[in-house]
Image (cartoon, rainbow, N blue to C red; front, side, top):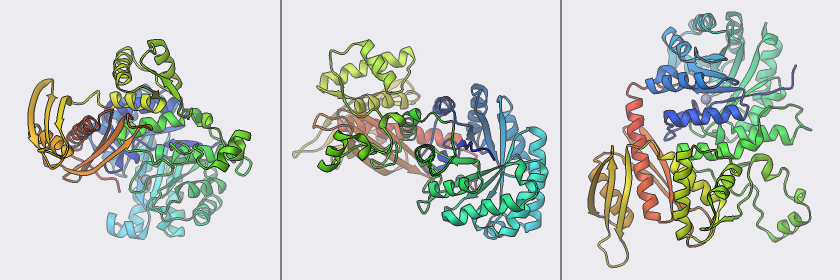
Length: 512
Ligand code: KIV
Ligand code: ZN
């Protein structure tokens, strides 16, 4: 059996199902390009039947990706599968991923089907998919709570019908490593035809075991891992791609398997996904967190100065984290700025570059020292609001002890300037009231978070806002030297995303 582990990225499918984590069409294309550059084996680009937006994204990604397999998800029905086939048709290497539940709980309550009917559905769906494309993945949803006997029969049926990859998801994050690994061993040893397909792990992180379970699957014969950048995904998320890749790389002596991923792109990918979704990366997140390579205690710092290996099992550079250092100021020119952005992993178009450079100069007027993190926040901020129909063009706020706290705001709404003044219970409330007055909506503020991008009182503020309305969530993030400007931009960003999401998911189909 080969030791190559295929990395299947589901950031744009399972990841986007995370409440509040919406991605626009262009953001998905941008992410797909990066995933391909990183040498991800399979890109799960979406769930084509779910909405026109998902279909369009899968189709467009299929047309621009040439090396990675592009995969679309579908349930077991013929309409789902045909729609999925249509979306991936233009791909150099198309795949249909079809699934149905196999646990007693799901079959009885969710599908309301008898086990024999589920077996028939597996046979029918995989046969149809195989008639449409040569590469078909079949998933046993809720596999870890299925009976072993029925799971074996289901997998055998899928293999006989022509599935090329068999995925065994821990849909609800219930498995523990030994038990999850044992399922793979059992299926591989006992199901006829198992040696002709690739087995795949797909783990959710409800108990914080998604990465450990995925690795246990590999040790028991799985050769594909489904994961997402920053561990994005339903509920507590999926196994984090960066953690899987680095665990296999750093501990190759304990787990003799390899991936083809270019690990030096992991940090940029994490930043991109965080920027696109508006989900901040926790500081102590393994591999890509801000503190993943920071050493605070004197004893550790002393050890690091003598030999970095005393407290580092991998270098920051190996995952593309250069470390924050003092970089530039108001006298830095265009060339230096371009070189710095390239070192941070950004290749901008001419227009985006000029826009970022102007913003950099503005920031340098306000802030003496510009750090790497400032530049990342600045570029990400510009990129994430580029498609917005509503934009903040001017803000003036009265704050302080005397009150009343008042916000005067100009918004560009589809290019037309509108302004108003509103009071509030504090300056942030005044700013949000003013936005609500110009763009009436029922959404409620679900999250408001501020953090400083770097140290010092002149640091940029990075604000995250999450809005919720009618079961839809949207998150956005914005950075500015002025916390209230960042707050206004983040609120407006979330509003733009919420409106896009509501439009896009007009006829939303839920994945089980
Ligand atoms: O978690 C799960 O079971 C899934 C399937 C649709 C593969 O995401
Ligand atoms: Zn899942």
